[in-house]
Image 1: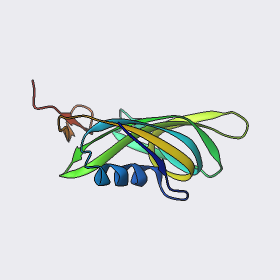
Image 2 (image 1 turned 135 degrees about the vertical axis):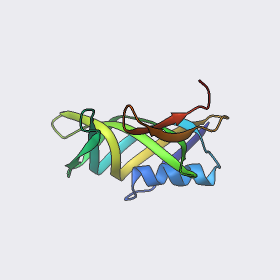
Image 3 (image 1 turned 30 degrees about the horizontal axis):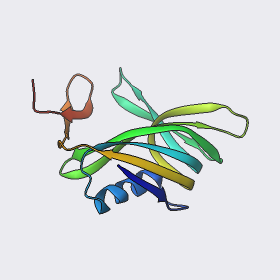
Length: 133
């Protein structure tokens, strides 16, 4: 298990990726807590097979941020979903693209099997390919 404080002002996704590269984590699961200054998040339209992106431009508290680490096109890929609350307690969430860190901590649980992402024709997403059928 890896536990780290992430850097102020940096992007949450890129900071988690940086920790994984430094610790040689290619596959795993993570949770993050803290607060962000801006968030770009999205919703996957299953019919159109594309993401709709949203931008929250104000400070917010992370109420939940979970995700996984895997390999996509021979590079570490961070896949995260986030819920966050604004100053009035209104909660929004979805697929996390970017979040400017005010304060954040992450716990990463490495997994010993390498999971690679491959294009899935049914969903239009790049999903885990375990190699088992």
